[in-house]
Length: 261
Image (cartoon, rainbow, N blue to C red):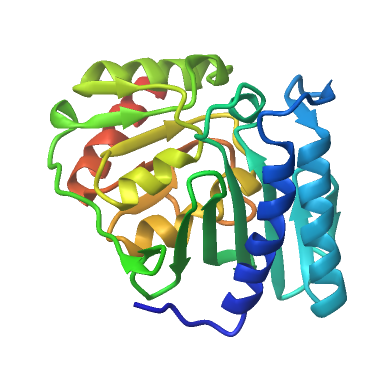
């Protein structure tokens, strides 16, 4: 199965360019800095994003860019690339391959193309709006899970639920689910898309943390929204829930809404 989109070749080119840079830093000594929001950044994050930005600016200069490390460029453009060079920097630093390079393309603010690339495991999920999601060229699908009580639920970590309402929502959702799994980073989106998990609940996110997941989850038959059930865009807030089964998603949203009411 081959996905198609006028800018899909560019998305692959960006991921292909990011891979050798990431691999050259992996499980090697790193200079680690702390950003203003207390998150971590390394020379690897910066080098990967700079590599991708340079390609976009050279080949698609009329497109906008929003990246984690170097901020916004031309966000008023019809097409804006959303870049997270290493989603899961803490995992990258500790040598745990749950991190990913996330690449999304938004058209008028809506994610229409998404790449989740795990360079160490040689795994690349591709989501294109209206088309089946693929992993390394093979179509993947979510699995059925009609109730939260039967669900495997993912999150990166409880420490990311900072605000009072986010903490309440996290506790309610994870208490209602069958099996919690932590330390998942954005790899959880890929696992849900291929039917190895059911729900992912996250807080304290930015557009570069979730935009790539939108076409991937939806193209695999799942659903991904904010905690109000609204569609995710480049302007969405920091609370995200993704599910493989729409029934489980509806129940998860109800649990979250009641917890934060």
